[in-house]
Image (cartoon, rainbow, N blue to C red):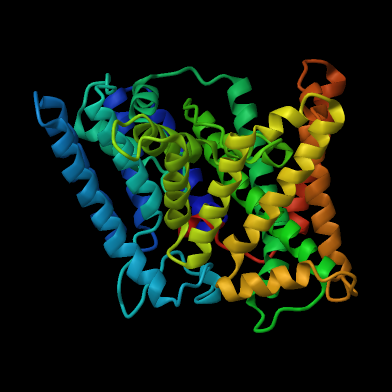
Length: 468
C-alpha cells in the first residue's frame, strides 16, 4: 500500500479514528499497531504477511538464542546473518536479473506495488526488512538490547507500518520503548506532524512525480540524445527527483509517527550542500549511512584480520551499498565510484584544506556536487553502456542543449532547487516562532502547498525506494 494511494488515505483515517481506543494500554496498543501494519503490508499481496511473520519469528528466536548463549555467539550470529542474507538473495537477485537488470519497475510494469517474474513472488521492502533483522542480531550479540525481548513488541517493531517499506531504519531499543510508552500528544506535536505530512506529499506528488516523468523518458529512450546541457539538466532533475521522492516518504512517515507520539529518525540534512562525499553520506539517507557505519565499516576497520584497514573497509562498505540497491553493474559502479571519492578524501584531506577559507568552502561544495552528479549517472542508467554514452554526451561541448526539454520541465526543476535552497538557507526556521505574523505566514505557505498538491499533482509513480 503506497502512501500516495487513495487506499492508504482510507486506511490511515480508520487507523486514527480507532487509535484513542488502544493508545493508553501498552499491550492493546502494540497489538493494534501490529494488526494495522499487517493489513498495510498485506494489502497488495497476502503472501507479504506470511513472509513478514516467518522472518520475524526466525529473527526473534535467533536473537534470543544469541542473548542466552554464554559462548559461541560469533558463530551463532554468523549463521543467522547467512540465513537472512540467503533469504534476501533468493528473493531479490534472480528477480532483478529476470528483468534484465532494469533499474526502475515502471520500465517493466507500471502501477504495481510488487514485482513478479514467471509467477514468482517478491516481498515489498525486503531489503529494509532484512537490514532491520541484521542490525537486531548484531545488537543482540553486542548486548545492546536492554528492553524486554518479547515477540509481540518485536514484531510490532519490525512491522511498524510508517517505516516498514522504505525506512527510516530504526534500532530496536530506540523504537520499542516509544511503542510501549503512553506519550502525551499535544497540539504542537499534532501540528508538527501535519506539516511534515503535507510537505511530504508535496515533495512526492508535485516535485518528485513530475520530475520522474522527464527523467524516465530520457533514460528510457532507446537512443541517447547527444546534447551536453540536456543531460546535465536531466541528471540535476534526477538528483532532485530521488531526493524529494525519498524525503517526501520520510516526512510522511515521521509525521504519522508524531501523531502516534513516536519519534522517527530524520533521514536527510540538505545533502547537496555537502563539502565532501564523506559529508554527503552523513547527510543523505542518514539512517542507512549509520547502519553501514555501525554494522559493516566499523567491524571491518577495527578487526584484527587482513581486512582491518579503513580503506579496505570503505571499499567493502560502498560495494555493499551499491549491491544493496540492485544487482546491475551500474549499482556496483556507483558504489565503487563513491568508495574512490572517499578514499581520495581520506588520503589527501583536500576538503578540509579547502574549507579553511570561504571561497575554498564554496569550491569544495561545487566539486562535491560534480562528483555526486557523475555518480548519479551510474545509479540511474539502465546499464554501463548507456552510462558511458551519457558521459560522452555530457562532456561533448559545445552543442545545442535544451531543445528537447519543455518549459514545464524547467518550471518544476527550478521550483525544486528554489525550495531546497530556501529551506537550506534557514529562512523557514525563522518562521517557527510564536508570533502572530510568523503563524500567519506559515499557515499561508501550508495553504499554498495544499493547493499545489491538488492542482499540480503529477502522474502517480511508486516511491523510488520501494524497490529496494
